[in-house]
Length: 399
Ligand SMILES: Nc1ncnc2c1ncn2[C@@H]1O[C@H](COP(=O)(O)OP(=O)(O)OP(=O)(O)O)[C@@H](O)[C@H]1O
Image 1 (cartoon, rainbow, N blue to C red):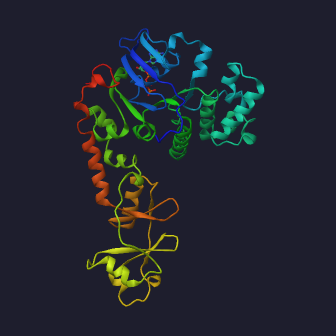
Image 2 (cartoon, rainbow, N blue to C red; image 1 turned 180 degrees about the vertical axis):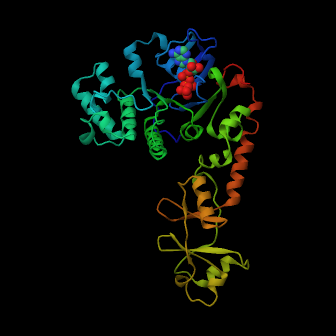
């Protein structure tokens, strides 16, 4: 996710954690070790039944490990009493898991109530949380869950998980039950919230794209929760650890990489730019003799308004009257994927980039996008050559 302003999260460490359900031949989770750094979003992703939920639920002790150790902020999870555990760990699940007979306010205020907050404090906090997730408290407090849309219920689920301000948030497919557009919006909101809150978030999904979008790190799990790869989304996309992970990454890994970087992250190229009031000869001189060269005419606030080449300039008296209106532009905030789409939409090899206030910032070309992908690839080309004992993944040997 993006840069955090604060980190309020706590580190979670799993050491050789195993869970065998009675009556099952194989352990559901077999000897898993991983460190989830404070303030990061770690996404557990893997096929159905691989043990993601079991792994997550052992962190808040909804499931007791058969063996191994889990610490939260350095404290053994088994030694934390139930009240403290509720305060430390927020939990949100698919279909929000709201209590149908309780109002939205009662749902959100439930954990603060359980840990003994006073009425007024709970009520204020409930309003604050509903605001935070984009629901007007005046409209929604007294409603019942069935009177809300699926997406709104999911928001309430997140508000409830955050209500007691826990350093750790466990989210088990929280957006699994909503349509793709709502899901995208909820993901964006979670990213915005997290940039502000800096919680430690463990997020379970079987949607790899969701993992790439939300994770600071992704743990790709195989059967029995075996960690196949535990790394940043960039590294997993650029260099999957093995064929199983590659299969999970799926087609279009290079394109997915483009969603992880923004235009401001790369060095832009340039074309000649001139204000409308500058002499035509200056633009001519800047374009030189190259018949393919083109330049951009700016308005008084340095915003690109038209592009021009030598042919347009022949015989004209002023830059005010020449050129072709600018097509779709990209902003420095856009993802490289947005930039690629703009390039394809315009059918050009170059797109114009504008800054925060619409001012000219440079240009971006198809070649630059290709070079960026190549650079990411080469940066991660040797990731698996490293001695993994030095890494924070100490899980049983990845196959
Ligand atoms: N209470 C239980 N008793 C016995 N076996 C269980 C129990 N809960 C889960 N399992 C088994 O443990 C394995 C891991 O299940 P788990 O729910 O953790 O997987 P998951 O990766 O979260 O799956 P999904 O993505 O389908 O939710 C599965 O084989 C499942 O059948």
